[in-house]
Length: 116
Image (cartoon, rainbow, N blue to C red; front, side, top):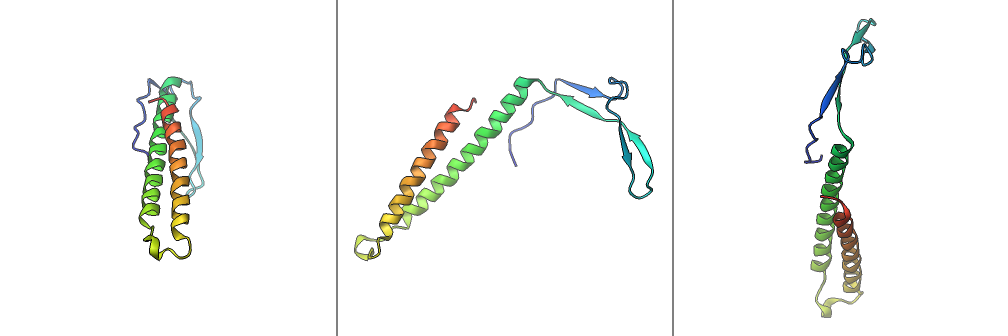
């Protein structure tokens, strides 16, 4: 769940303003009777939602980068002393660490290109 808060709407549409346009018909499953309910809808400007989407995207990319950094640290820590490395384990750790570094740099470039 994102920690980014939704922007405050600049206005609201209600059933009274829309001359019944936001009223919805619902059926109660227990009584099988139909009733009309009114609805209220928040109104946002384009720039508000664009900023919100950018903030959520940035937050998500930063979380991905933290995960990649943790995976990189584990790959480096899992190396064994050279004299014990008989099956090329360290080479695999090195390749994994390099791939994670590359992925992290790509994510960083996406973060930097996302408006703050």
